[in-house]
Every structure is written in structure tokens, then in C-alpha cells.
Image (cartoon, rainbow, N blue to C red):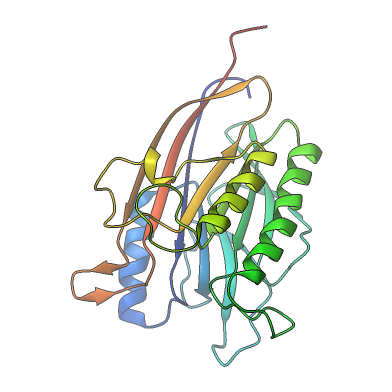
Length: 252
């Protein structure tokens, strides 16, 4: 990283993005933010951000919702490589070059309450605990394998972090925070870091960042919008967008 770099990363669970009229509204909101990267979860091939962006996606969901996918990453910048992840149905990771800065983006959906999991017999938050621990190992591995890169983890993490209780459990939040900390990831969308009133309730979709040694996160601006826009219910999740400025340390 030769100089200060500004990155703008957003994430939104779009509740499978069906319907031409709603998708036109969703697309307008997404494009208006002009983010470098969008991580869309519970998304659909009908919600298409090209030609302004190119995409990489998880495998199609095996469901009646033809064209649905757990996660898609849309980027304005060249994709250097796609990085293999353990769960190709829920997660993906890509390596980008953004204004001379190496960036790894890991998009994901973590399990929700009573997610039955692949065995179909999980209940409560047991699947969340299992998968969060496994994905946490991947976040730490990416930090080790790409020590000179900015690492971004973004998506539907299914826990509010900070602020009044909205969704999740105290144990789930503690586990998630621990796994983020192991990889030196800072959650920029922690409700306690956001300007009060940005959203009606704390988000469960998050943007988390880890910077390489010798770089600093010098400022951040977090915005977002509600899933309901006027009379239109575009999603049951709010969107969040984090703009961050990274700079090299001036200390030797």
C-alpha cells in the first residue's frame, strides 16, 4: 500500500431479490452508493449489478427458488483469484487489487435460530456455534496466508453486535466476537460504533476488517438503510455500508 486508500464495502441480505419492480428499487439503492464491493446474501440471479460490477457467487441453492444463492460478491475492481472455502454453498472468498491495495473479501451467511444444518437435526443455536467456529478458522487462515492484504469479512452474521438486543444470544455474540478477534477483525458495523439513529435497530449484517501490519484504519463512515422503503418491503434486513480510510504507519 503506497498511500492512503479509501475502501467502500457494503452488504445486504436481499431476501432472494425477486420481482422486477422491487429489484429496480433495490438496484437503484445499491448503485447509488457506488461501493467498491457489495456482498449480497440470500440473493438471486435476477438482481444483476452488471455492467458496472462483475461478480463471483456461491453454488446455486438446491431449492424451488431457482436462481437463488446464499452469497454473491459484486466488485468494481479486477478479481485476481477466487480462494477456495470449506463451504462453497454459503461462503466464498476473492482476492482483489483496489488502487494498489491487496484486498481479500470473504462473504458469508452464518446460521440462524433453528437452522437445521446439513444433518437436518440441529436446533436452537447449535448450528450457529458449529459453523461460526469453522468459519473463524478460515478467517484466521486467510490472515496468515495473505499477511500483506486487507481482509474483509462481510455478510449476514445473524447476531447484532452492540446496541440493544435485536437478534441472537449473548453466547452467540461472545463466540462471534472471539472468532473475529482471533483474526484481528474489527466489526465496523457494531452498533456502538455507528452514529445513533442510522438504523431503527442494530444490524445483523456486518462488515468486518483486518489490516496488515504497518497499516492503520484511520477513519470510517458507516451508513445504511432499512429493508422497508416507503410502502415497499425490499427485505427483512437492513443494508450497511462501511467506508474506511487505510494508511501506512509512519512509525518504523
